[in-house]
Length: 460
Image (cartoon, rainbow, N blue to C red):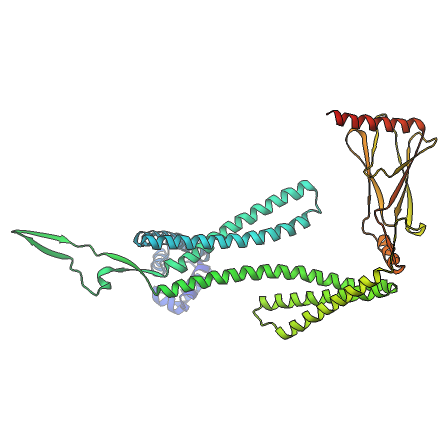
């Protein structure tokens, strides 16, 4: 039984001492103390008296926890309150629309459509950005798992967007219209009293009828309401612009870091002379331009004035540096020479062996392959590339083998580029030489297969 705990809670919640409670129940203080300590239990008539005094039932007092009972009652009251508020909202909305003029109804619906459109635009922009971030993160996972997670997250985001849109729309509608419109009695508006009964005489017949009071819906200070709504739209648009500006600012933060790195790396080509100084000035001008954009973006977001004089001077300085750097770079290019055939120091050689088959075709777009007869029963490719570049092979349909040259970024490629710039040389990174060593029979088979393949295409 929870009687002793319940008695303590009831007494403390009602700011009663043991003596006060004993006085109300007509017992001694010692009796109340024994009840609360569990040494004794009250008689049934005292239990009934306690229940009547504090609006409880016997089962709750003896067997239940009063705290839980109060919480359950509160939750029931809250649920009932939410239901009543929702029904009251619907009733007021229907009554307001039925009393509004047709023109006012159209304006109201148009404004709600504008609000929904603005909210949808915000969620679409935010969703597009989040989708790009999530795709970049999930691409590290297997395709099936990534696809499933992407669908789940998209569904969750859509659900949350719809719920938030409904909540915001109801709030705007309630603030803009439902709380701003009042329904008054038409005769009260004209300061006239309405009699509930009137007698109308027509010839010698007396008619008695009850005239219903007419209700009219009016708006308080309509001009202020219109301006308030327009200001709300402008604030929402300004918020959207600031969000977009923040994402643009993040992009220029990234480019700012990139140009700082480029500024440091430019000292690697200090031996190139004027080209080094030209590129250095161009990079500095790009850093200044990035700073200007970030400064304007930041001040716009926090509603702070931009120092126009300082910004103007920085723009002028960046233009001067960019023009000077471009001029120095162009002047220095005349001292560089283009190496159509790279030096042996810039070339790396590799080999690839492919098993020969009767239907094999070697497909090359620029036909730069050199076929050399040898004793090899398979196909032995000897490939020459610029350092850092390589030739990739892959098998297509119908036993066709393709290969192409690719230059992936690597420390070796970067080092070769820096060395060539310092030596005032320009390398052709598309350069590659491929030599095929195989026997005469294989050479004839390859030529016959390729000839048949193209004749087949021409017929059909």
